[in-house]
Length: 140
Image (cartoon, rainbow, N blue to C red; front, top):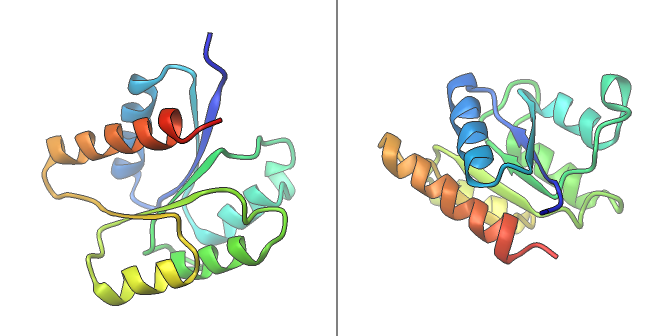
């Protein structure tokens, strides 16, 4: 039996979040997808504060850039500056194909930058391939 693999999905678009969750779980049934919808909730989750005090540390963080309260670049900077959190791989998963967003994300030490395709089938395929890489090939 495979060990559980936990993603923290930081995504404010509930349709995208549900599609990502279903695709990840279909790919590997032992997958756990924890979901928060803004940057402040993400940091509270990662620091196990408030309602998130007993939540598991994620194996991979999936981070949208366009978030309420605190944008994805700000969340990424906080994660990578935190000694306890910086080792967690962060995959930026966004609609932004702007070179400046990509450059800033990598400058802040994102581990990967993926642009969400507009086509539904391509979007599912990208999530499946990402799951294989981070959840299977790149996991210990």
